Amino acid sequence: MTATVRYTLRPIRPEAHLFEATLTVDAPDKAGQRVTLPAWIPGSYMIRDFARQIVSIRAESAGKRLALTQLDKHSWLAEPTKKALTVTVEVYAYDLSVRGAYLDITRGFFNGTSVFLRPEGLAEQPCTLDILPPEGKAFDGWTVATSLAPLDVNKKTGFGRYGAAAYDELIDHPFELGDFERVTFKACGVPHEIVVSGRHRGDLKRLARDAKKICEYQIRLFGEPAPFERYVFLLYAGGDIYGGLEHRASTALVANRDDLPLKGDKALSDGYLQLLGLISHEYFHSWNVKRIKPAAFTPYELSTENYTRLLWAFEGVTSYYDDLTLVRAGLIDRERYLQLLAKTITAVERGAGRRKQTLEESSFTAWNKYYRQDENSPNAIVSYYAKGALAALALDLFIREKSGGVKSLDDVMRALWSKWLADGQGLAEHEWEAIAEAVTGLDLADFFASALRATEELPLARLLATQGVTLTFDAAASASDRGGLADSANVKERAVLGAKTAADPLGVKLTQVFDGGAAQAAGLSGGDVLVAIDHLKASDVDKQLARYARGDRITVHYFRRDELASATLELAAAPTDTARLALAGDAAWLHR
Image 1 (cartoon, one colour):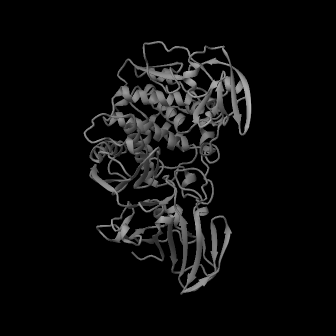
Image 2 (cartoon, helix red, strand yellow; image 1 turned 90 degrees about the vertical axis):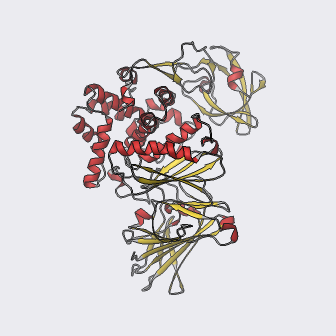
Image 3 (cartoon, one colour; image 1 turned 180 degrees about the vertical axis):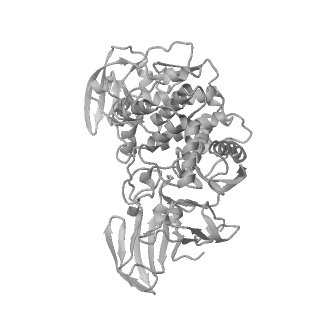
């Protein structure tokens, strides 16, 4: 392809975690070319200032070094030149998440937002990218995996030239470099690839079989053909890690290596179920946010926050469909799905923030609240992921009830997809609601006002009952009880601190203190470290409090920073905030 904007990327010093990326512009701005590195990455709504990882930057033209003036934290202006301009950056890459860039002697990974400068005024021009291998025999086995279209690459290794129609496309295809494993399958005739890096002993053939069921269900939900010609899952298997980030024809995933299924093991562990849910979530985003998206994201403005009140519709609705896909695709049964749903209901119920922040507010303030959580967050905010999923569930069941089972949320999603196929435009802030009303023929104004713009409780118990599912709440049986299926046995009343805890070398750390709890009433705060409970070393709080009852008073000693203090707490009973679901009917919505 002919391109006036060219990029190269090379891992120059894997041992020092350094990538070198160059941008070459054949016809730079005559007044001086401005170049910018994004401040955030689409799908993760927080300013991350990727430019802070730039170790060095230089500009040259015709073999001559040019002056480069920094304009702000992520923008530079090159000295005017009449010839081709090349700007080179060295980027420190040691972020193991899905959002940035990573490089060591075992593997490399990067998102374009972390390494590729944007030439202002030329970002809509076609561009090429040359991926070069690191030097040295130690890297002879390295290959490349990406969903970006190849132009002239080594068929065996994948190193070589790739092409993109514009900068926006270039940065929407992450790359994995290294000696990794691959497994392929087709979903509705579309080639799919799962690339797994990191040490593991997982059964990738089973993973591919299960992922195929997820992909085919979602493609058929929206309607064939799929919106891509090829799809790639980039999965890093490590320790104590979890996350995903969607892209237009791929997704970057990180998960615990032990969550991968073992060869010969037919069981579906909780860890593997979580991984399948993550795959389902990110794949659903191929339609819902990568294409159907808010008008505020068309186009993305990557130098600053892009505010919208619609994140509940893109992350929340996707969070509803991720687990729903698993049961509809036949990977789990209805009871396993209800266990997952009960945990989501419990998570929302346990946060006092749901009474203070609406879903629209949660969406709008994601940039400085949801993505910047602290010890008080459960008391102040609600998750547009979790409560958004419950709002989607409630909407789905409400539509089914009022339409006599003729319409559902599926129809709304297909209508949104049809609109995008027709015009490719983003949604205005209340257009999602208007389309839902139009396709269902229902007046949904009161529902949306209550669910999105108020802090009222969602009518989940009543709506679930229409599907033969009973919702009740009781106290948690233990600190690890996150909700599940109803049990005929009565839960013993427990005395609790009213705080979330974690192990600490000195004792037990209070990571979060909940509104109205015993710990808060006694003046304890998130970050305090309990060293003694009634003059005994603090260790397992749940076990230690098992000998106490509601109303008992205990003395705790704790450190706040480096100061030792004590307090007397009057223990409260565990709140009835743990969801239990029981199946008494057919739960028809789980199948269509």
